[in-house]
Length: 101
Image 1 (cartoon, rainbow, N blue to C red):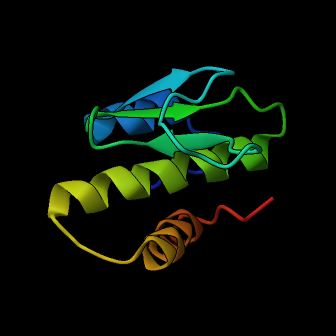
Image 2 (cartoon, rainbow, N blue to C red):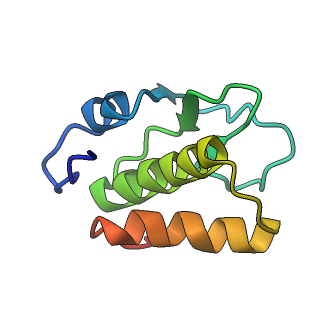
C-alpha cells in the first residue's frame, strides 16, 4: 500500500517505499527531452527517476510524483500515447495534492 506523500514528507523516502531511486541531477539523461525538462523516467533504468534539484518545494514535489507516476505505469505494463502518458502522470501527481507549478 502506498503511503500518501504529504507536503512535509521526504520525497526520497516515498520513492523508496515504491522501490524507486531518485537521482537528483542538473543533467537529465533520458535521451530526447524538452530543453526545459525538470525530470524524466526511462525504461532503460526502470527503478530510477531523474529530477533537477528545484528550489521551489511545490515544483519539486510535482516533478518527482509525476516521474514516479511514469515509472509505476511502466511497471504495470500500461500502454498509452505519449500525450496520454503525460496526462496520466500529471493526474498521479495531482492525486497526492501536488499542483503543476
